[in-house]
Image (cartoon, rainbow, N blue to C red; front, top):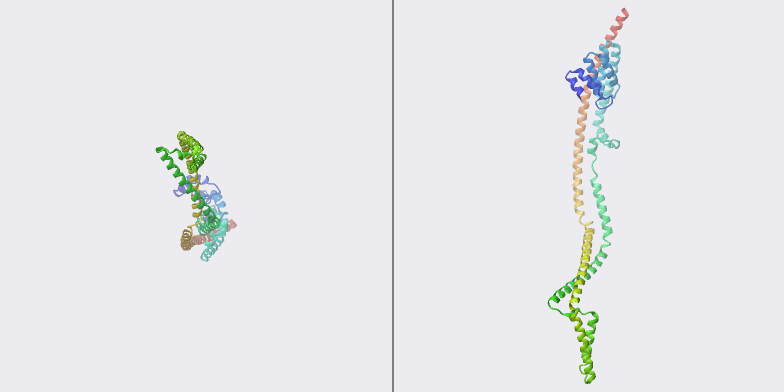
Length: 366
């Protein structure tokens, strides 16, 4: 604070100007009021020092600046030769310091009984953003793991009854798919050979194949036939077979091209089927991995969290004892200061009382 720096440098005028700009409500207001009064006293403006010290003396009694104001205010009255008022305020200060000493003693006793640490973790204090409370608000790691284990159990209960039936149907479809893929590969290989060594008969339609079988059967049945009728029938069968062979030979390029086109269309269907197959395999593995293999990691994490919590408990106790020790040390120092203030107030009370009595005696003589 700039005003404090000026005050400690004995630049009381600059200190007064800086301190006067401090707001009456705020974290620095009490010290500002106290320093402002002392700056006026340093300039021997005792009546002006009364203004900030009166305001300060009525504030929270546990503040060190307020306690100092209990001594400073009657001191200013004494400098103004208002010894009766000074004696009265010194007497009140003695009583106030006694009350504060009692509070300090009670606080030390409560700390030694463990009430200090209990107060730190009270539910209403947890709503505060104080750093001590945040340190004690540890995440519930074990509870989260239990919830995760319940989630895995629910997944297992859902998927395990479904997977056997799905796997059975998948195996049937997988066998049929593999058969069709083998047939497709065989067809592709035969078509590649037809490009090198044409075989028109292999591209015959179903009707043409049936006709070829029927003609072969008729030829077989006419082998023993004689006479003009037999020769006429065999000639007729030969013409039909020739027409069939002519169709196969002349239409071979177009039929081979059409077959390749159908094979390409089949390739697109096979790719789509393969993509669906792969997607199912990934989904099946994801479903299985959604609940298998977690028992050991969760068990290990439970163990690690348990060990960590044990260490945290030990550290919390250790730090709690340290906080208690620091708090007691501070309270003991505060008690020593309050005792010093109280003794000074007693001596100042006696002195002011004597001065007030002498002033009254002189007034009565006059």
